[in-house]
Length: 179
Image 1 (tube, rainbow, N blue to C red):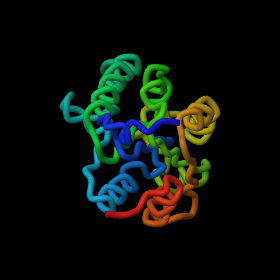
Image 2: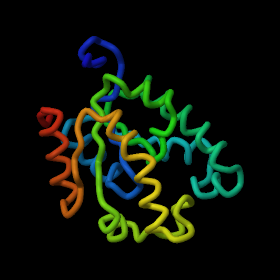
Image 3: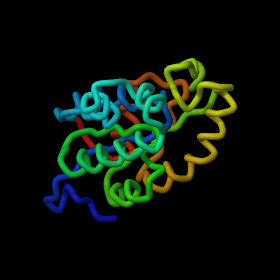
């Protein structure tokens, strides 16, 4: 597998994917700090550009509109960010996005439903989990797990680990050293 960064192409040093609540933002920030790089989150990019929360975009404009914004945010970030990049949980649903991620150092942060409940409570701020959150989380993971695995160079389980332990496991999995 080629490494775009090693070939002089501008690309993220690490890309984190995984379900909502898996720790992409927290772990991404820790990794960026350890590597002396900037951290970028495509969900935060969308919120900043739209001036409203993702849940509001879903309610007001629908999931299809949000996914179009997400595709554009991922394209921009992959092309222009050389630090640590965290993608929204559903970004990998798009084939174009999965194609963009090929050859990049992508790490899938995995967790089970019990860990998701513990971390985020699977509450109302998550628009895709508004009704029967445990069941919907399991269904989302059944639909997405193979896509996360498809794009990932490494899988790091986050269950029962601190963010610092997960960050260390990501560095080990990608054989990266701290700054």
